[in-house]
Length: 162
Image (spheres, rainbow, N blue to C red):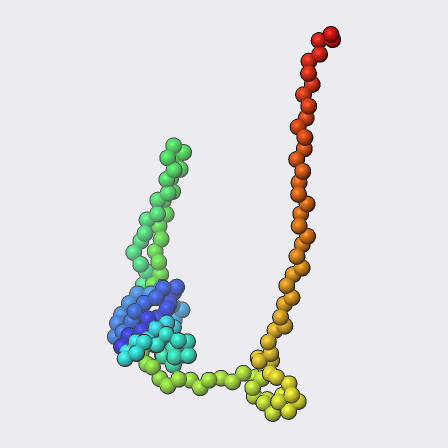
């Protein structure tokens, strides 16, 4: 049984008891965090949103650490331009404590469906069932007039006066 979760803009394949480094999470050390499942797999794969609402993936924050230093060097030849900077990513080490696929949550009814007796007695349909009005096609523009070509300008001939 495993799950694919999304955190920090990245996706990870996790199993129970697995430790991994993710981007910094806003939780204290020792706290439990819920991870967003994208896929759950045991006997069958669960992809749909309704099925994933019942899946709970929890992890425990083990420690907050910083990644290794990355050196960034910018250089433009023949211009005397050199810049050196560094970067250390802030990370969180977590341990997956449980992956549970509970019973599905009951489907929520829209607010319009709650007042069934009021709307149906008057013969009105709920707002969710109304269809938008069909659009009329736009009127066609008249065809452009064909452009006529100008006659070439006449050259003045040299006159000798004779």
